[in-house]
Amino acid sequence: MIINNYKEQYIVKKQKNKIFKNKESLSYIFFALIVIYVCFLIVPIIGLIKYSGIKKILETINNVDNIYCLKLSMKTSLISLLLTFLFGTPTAFYLSKISKNKIPKIVDIIVELPIVLPPAVVGIGLLLAFGDNGIIGSIFSKLGYSITFTPIAVIIAQLFVSSSLYIKVLKNSIQDIPKEIFEVSYVLGASKITTIIKVIIPMLKRTVISALILSWIRALGEFGATLMFAGNVMNKTRTIPLQIYTYMQTDIKMATAFAGILYILSFIMILTIRVLLREKSE
Image 1 (cartoon, rainbow, N blue to C red):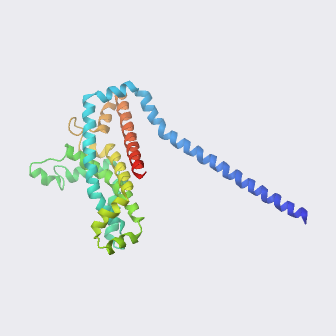
Image 2 (cartoon, one colour):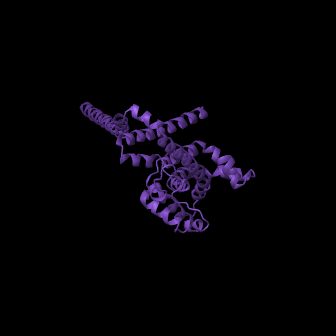
Image 3 (spheres, helix red, strand yellow):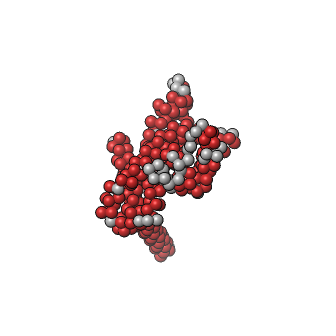
């Protein structure tokens, strides 16, 4: 009887040790996968900075043409960001309350399409819609205005490709809010719009800012649709990615230096906003 008890205890202990070893080995595998993925993200940045050099990056910043591209990118992306907030916020609230009605579901699919569509396809679509002979562009063309090959075309391209990210993130966060919060606000006499502006958006402040940052960075990095629709015109539509593309044909070192600047700029933007959000929360 005693021998059997010892046997059982030994088997249980052995199984526990085996489970512990399995868990330990799994944790090592997980850690290794994380390290490989982080290295996968960091190595291209190191490669850019190493190839171009800090001196070349500083020279790139002082270049007059590059300064204009930076200014144009910032200006157009900020305008597209404002439009994303204005159009995207009500759209996200509408889509978050999807019922069995088929129309909102179709709208939801249409809104998410820019996330998966190739940039070249987006560019062709925008050209056929807003070009001089396009569905909407022809109306402006008759009035003597042209959208293509102008900064407006850059803003439209950026808005099209980046707004979906903002709407998707905000919509998911709205769906996580308990219905009771909305109901209490309505009982207290607040309308739906007042509830959204004064109750829900302040609650989701961090989500809204994070989603806008994602959208902004996506707009800054937009290339394919802008090239197809707005063109690559210096002092008019040439944004940072288009300038990098132009340099790739003539000066690879300058292209890598400018690409490094875009990496650094994106990193600083994310870091700054996260620090500000942390300070506000504290």
